[in-house]
Every structure is written in structure tokens, then in C-alpha cells.
Image 1 (cartoon, rainbow, N blue to C red):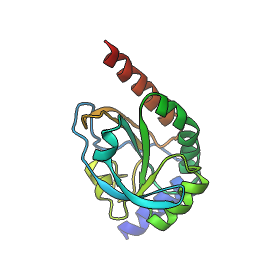
Image 2 (cartoon, rainbow, N blue to C red):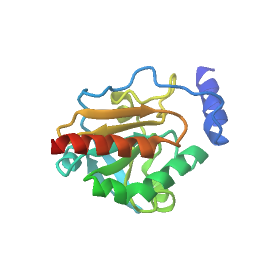
Image 3 (cartoon, rainbow, N blue to C red):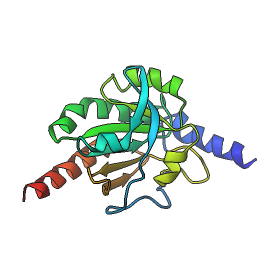
Length: 185
């Protein structure tokens, strides 16, 4: 019964692309917290590989963004926005990874069509990463829409939670600009 109710709520909120109301995460990682390291199966442009956060952080900051489900309206909009901004992230020395509860076969398609082969998306079918980042929707294993900026030392620089996909890219880019400006001092 509880599972069916949660599924109906999910379909209502994401299947139509309309959020009836906003669900903020009850608890998220805060700036200064240590970001949990993870290795996950990911797809970039349809090619599957093992993504390691620790390895990516050796190259610079990482934007880790969680999204509820591939191919839903809001998640498609958000993927397009991140894809369009990849060059700006690169200019700031950062990379991007999206994570959802979807399986890797779904994400192989999503990484090509919606992410446009510009950044990887990782499968978290068991929601272990989602849970470790406190990024689950209440009463569900599905991810909330949460974006983190992780510093190369593994600490959270910035967190933004909103079911609307509209400001995740702009806010994470600004957080990276602010961090980069502090690094120059």
C-alpha cells in the first residue's frame, strides 16, 4: 500500500513533468561535510564504464547532481541544461556527473539523447549513493533533485535542492566561480 502510494506520488510529480508542491530533502549534506566516495557504473555517450569520484576529484571539482528519473520532463530539461553548460564547467576546471535510481541500460540511452554525450550519468539502482548523500525523496528510494559541488579535497562546497530543474546549473556554476575566486587569494 505504502509503495503504491509513493509510486502514484512519483508519477504525479514527474510523469507529467509538473511538481504539485516542492519536496525539500529532509537532510542533505551541508557545505563543509565530507562527500562520500563512490564508484558506480556510468555511461558517457552510450559507453559504459566504472566512474570513480575519487579519480575525478584528482582533476578538479566535481558537480554531482541527483535527479529522479531519466526521460521524465524535468530531468530531461535538467540534462539538456547541464549538457549546454559543460564547456563553462570545463573552463572552471570542473566536471559533472548525474546520478539516478535508473538502471544502466536506461542511462546508456539517456546519456546519448538527453545528456548529448557531454557528461556521464551513473546508475544507482540500489540507491546506495543516493542514500549516502541524503538525496532521496521522502519515503522513496528515488533521488530528489539535489546538486552538490565537491571540492578536490572531497568536501562539499555547495548544495542546492529544488524539484525545479531551473536553477541547478546557474547555482552550481556560481558556486564554482566563487570557489575559484577564493583560490586566487
